[in-house]
Image (cartoon, rainbow, N blue to C red):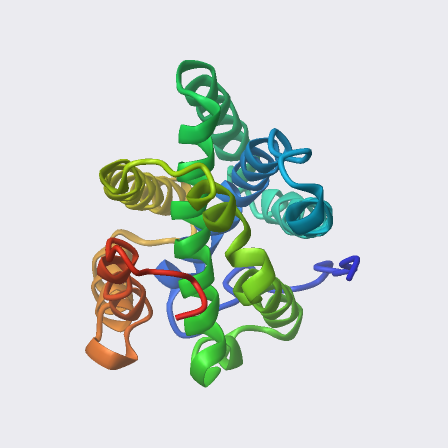
Length: 247
């Protein structure tokens, strides 16, 4: 589905109960265009690997990721009107991924894609699981994140890179080490980007930096109701030898 979102006139803080969480979602959005283009490049190298099984899946995956990039580009452009420096971060992420890509093998790029698609799928499932988070977003932002979450959690999408990687008969330890490394880098990067947006936000008072960050982290990590808690607890299952996204 080709996205069509209009953010004109929407509020800067679209998660109304916490400014920190707004900037956490802004950080996610800043990583998506560059990240999704990295995913596309990773799977495109295997487009002729097995036409019978993978050709149509890869074509569909590439189209969906292109549409996701369009959707987040439109949101990221609007965020700039509020002086949220998403474009610079977006550029930095894209450059960093292209640098990494030049210094590792295609199969390692595919393994990174598989690992990060697991994270995006689990985040998407968590958004859709109870609607607790989506229902607190303003309408246009809710549509954006719901649209993205539905496609990212679809089995044929989230399992493509994993299935391609497993077909290469690589050592299990490679898959697991790349997942651990990608996880550490991803969440350090998201933490830094979120902190950067808060630091640059002139409407965020020093007191709010403390109170909103504390409250936001508590909400994100709050046991079975915590967005990040529920995403993090799904990481170990990826390391299981018998793991597959459909499980």
